[in-house]
Image (cartoon, rainbow, N blue to C red; front, side, top):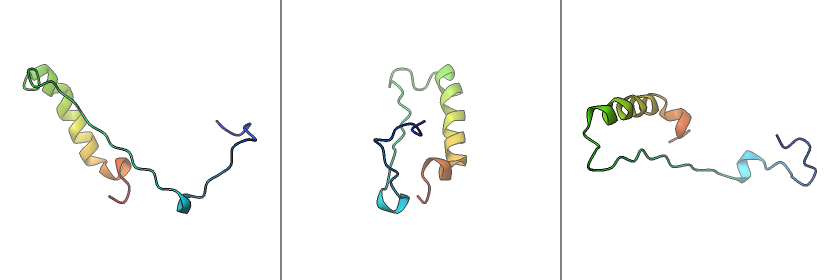
Length: 58
């Protein structure tokens, strides 16, 4: 993606640390609806099962 960008330089992984936060937001009025939970529960389960992919080392 950046191979043709001579103005960019590689940064060694030991010189930088990136942290990402993920949130699944649901409105309080609809969070208990079956259709909302039908989407939210598999997302929660998938993220939980792959936690190392989302937060390596954490």
